[in-house]
Amino acid sequence: MTQNERQTLAALSTLILLQLIMLSSLYAGISPHPPAATPFFGIAPFVGGSVAIAVAAIIVKPLASKCGHSLSILAALTTLVSFGPQKYLDAQFALIWPAVILGQCAALVIFVHVVNAARQKGETDQVAKACGGLV
Image: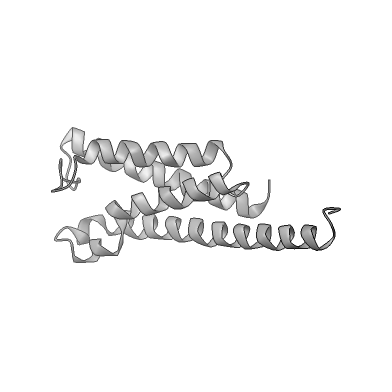
């Protein structure tokens, strides 16, 4: 396992833990916690889906294939609904800033490693085609 793979797995695990802890605080009624619902969806089903996507990305190896790349990016994007830059304007930001900053850093790690892996894979495919598939 490469260092990039370890870092991407760690970032996905961080997103999973952050979401589960925040959801647990909602269930326990411990402030600060996310709202039970948004105008578009209930928070628990959304967080459940986001966690499931991140787990799926870990299972298929986030940097190994297009499927892993897609699931990793989707996991980071869905997490940014809860921890994205819009949270800087949240009334509770003074209480939630550690989770927001950590979530954004984890998402950034995922984006950088997936983009780099996709670029390297593209370069490898181009070399293989140029060599007549011998690589």
